[in-house]
Length: 132
Image (cartoon, rainbow, N blue to C red; front, side, top):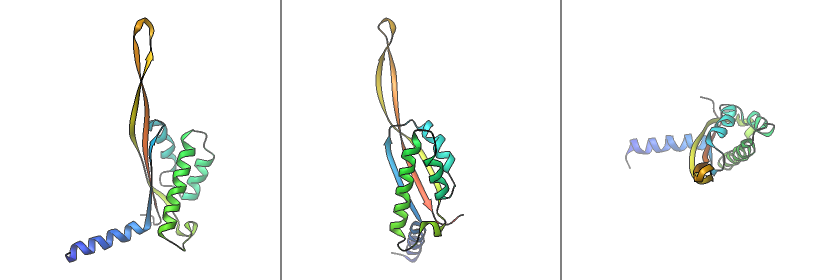
């Protein structure tokens, strides 16, 4: 391995030690509804984001809170001996992508049928300890 490649790998390893990633795949909520909740916690401190999700009234808040707690646990596993409150964790990135779509048929008048698309989504949360 060359010096440039080794230096790039060391730099990448150092940046990955500061962040933690958690993913939720095939969540049975439409991406549009999930993005409404995800936009409220993007860039917030972790404690503030958990409070927003815990007292939110929308249905996806329960799933996002659990996913955020998973990301925090992943960060704690990488950084043993450091408390998340002291590190200043925040939600650096949250992405909601469309997942698979279940296609169903709804009977309609006069022998016709309407297509029902039951959407799902994939959510990725990245928790970071240093503000950019």
